[in-house]
Length: 392
Ligand SMILES: Cc1ncc(COP(=O)(O)O)c(C=O)c1O
Image 1 (tube, protein in one colour):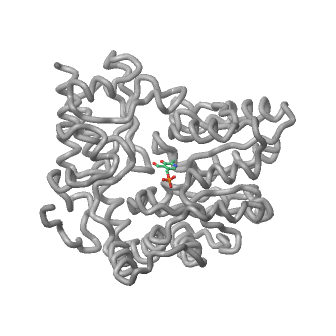
Image 2: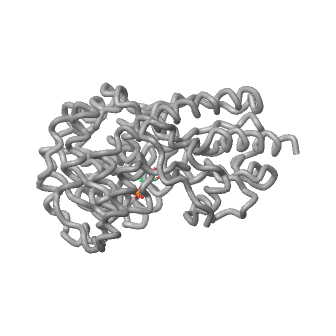
């Protein structure tokens, strides 16, 4: 392996630290699923050099042989402190948290607590494809309440879904994604408060996936459990997306005060798959990685602007509205006339890999998801390849 940069200064843009040649040495999914000539801007991994305190914590643990089983509340305490400082959310109680192996397994465990086999789980399509796969795999039914054309929750559609699902007399859950993958929508306090009121009215339990929360500006993100009426909600939080730690798995389930007894019913073995190194890395990120995160957010903002400019110039019929959260860009390619899966054309003729919109459920056809957490040069090259694939 060629020598890599050892670290970056805390306030430097971590998206500019690695070259394409260095990134191609990676062995993770993003860089290995497609052949070498394909530029990958698909799966939610970031092309960043890690925050130095995170890298150091992992190195120290490995050097010490501290590679056993996870225990303790350090991760939950770090999240609680981060939430208080970042979002002014001061009621994230460590005793109402549980470590889970990762966010999706945490989602499954929370849904098991509040629904029964065969029961309904409502989602806002288009949405992160594993929401369908995991919910179906655990023997629940997915019910779609599509987002509006503005990518925001349509409260009338949601209410109709709550009413219809509630009419079955079964226990119903709403799996909310905030910030929303793939659109990047950050739900407002008013929207979340309205959701909590509807959930209370129809007896629906809210489970919220807040994995992308650190990637939204702290001025706009509002934790669901902090809004009035959300006391019986359950949230999944993690440093995984914010600090690019998907390979160092760990997450936290957080219960509102009226859901504490539900969380207490989670079987102890549900926490067993969690990685001790993951917990160490996530704890260091939340505690000591905030300077790095802020520099990343500046870099992501620059990339959003760059992507908008490049698309306007090279692919003006692709509709893209820069979003407030996540590093994902949801591209409406319907005017290109490439059918349901424009990502197939981009891949086959442009040798650039985006995520195919149809995987995201209703509302995904004709769309593609672009991961803009990369070097601006790679982003520029990706758009050039997309444009070339249209001319080809
Ligand atoms: C909304 C959402 N939830 C969960 C995950 C996966 O998280 P984990 O690897 O912790 O299960 C992702 C990954 O991209 C995601 O976007």
